[in-house]
Length: 213
Image 1 (cartoon, rainbow, N blue to C red):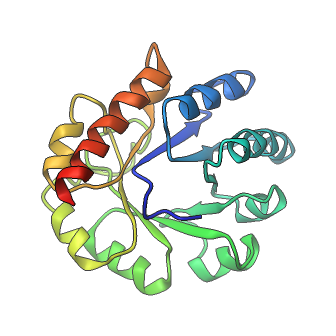
Image 2 (cartoon, rainbow, N blue to C red):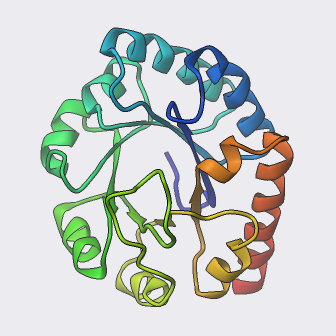
């Protein structure tokens, strides 16, 4: 999975999407140009989760969109996902890599520069950095704001995906602060037209990348 060229990371979060609607939402996300898709399914039956992950893997594979499973590296391996993602309170990167398999990309959530530095040293293939803004998706974490984004990018050449409360209305500010890649969750999943929303976000990121290069 080549993350270097990926800019828009979408999370299909079952806190916002009913499992019965997951396929249609995933198709809209892909149509809109999401570069990476993650399945996040807290407190779900694992058997149902495997079934859903297999379905999403088939959809993403057909469109060459990298597919990541949150929290469950073993499920990532069982459905041949491209990646697995772990949080600060989850297993170490090395253990996640053993469970997911040697060819699986492993990402890690970080909430400060110190945590990001530790995740890089631990061997994370990419970093989630946030939450930038207050978000119901991460109610237990304080917003870290935009001030450290530039410093974060100066620490590593590994892909950094800024996350947390990012929506179309604040995306220009996030980009202006130095972000090159973002994760959008609720703003995307709750949009009246998911594909159009994703397309707009992707256009902003692509325009910024053209200017940065």
